Length: 235
Length: 201
Image 1 (tube, rainbow over the protein chains, first blue to last red):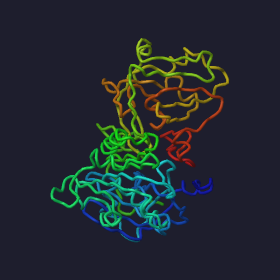
Image 2: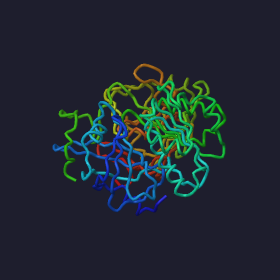
Image 3: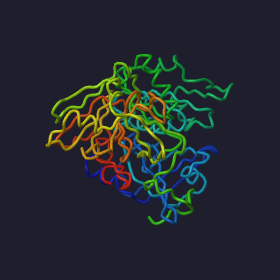
Image 4: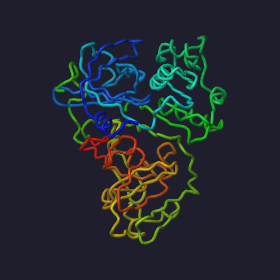
């Protein structure tokens, strides 16, 4: 998982250049960053973005990497939280050419090598790291190694919907009745994903992950195979 | 980098209780766990203090409840940048258990272990002298399962990953043994006032 030199390099704050800013919806922004002396990440890792106000006040948040390791740029999917101090800045103010202070990649628990079977279950912005895993699996020529089930309120709020549809992911849209993917990830949907030989990567809000892990364990997925990354409304 | 273009920050009056880079999460209390949440039966739960002690000892929750109670009233800080100010927990001081088992002079560190296998390491000095608790109540209510109930460690002067949920065992050692997050890229000690978040800080 990278030697000590890589870890020291990844721990250093550096100025990344914003290369692209895209708004898939009013509730989200996708940033693509050029990180100097980038340490190649593993799918599932995250970067920390730190903002500094003129009076020295700082605010920082972690964002999972949505790009594959082979991508030269680091792609971050940021959900715009209404009162969010950092997300509203990233969604409303950042422009290509801006510099953002970052450190990363960070994390050695919620990571997937791409070499073994995996199941990814994500809710809302928790889908982002799973998309990074999917892109890596595609790069390796083995997309079938990762089975995905994702949930969001509407298709507009689902990160990377077209890519997920093309990959054959199970999609559940909980507040778009009549839509093609209307529904929930219920006990049956989760039972269909159970694979004791796979590592399960579960990512989303505390409520979503709490519900999903209960369904997984009840359906027979060994608890020790489940790795969870919980997002808060913050942090 | 000096300043981020166009960023002013929401808070102009900075609460001095907030360590650098933290913000006040208010009435909420986010849940963060790396592994699946366990179900721990309070009637069968026990905690053991062992390692470099004179008398390794195991207690049930009933046995802990008859020891002199202790309340922590203050702030807690998570490495993911939220802080919860002016909260409180009820349980017993960890010093009470250390006094009962007798700490051997060569002990320098501890490892806390959860029922899930989660571990976190600390210098012994960071868990004695009124700095650590075992708690089973938060703000007057039984500690919920998702927050580490029935009983968790509480070491509030360090980032909250050092306060193991579903505490099962505390082992005293004569060396430092990196725990789960420490092995996975986080700092060995985790002092929020020195912003010791990650390995290399």
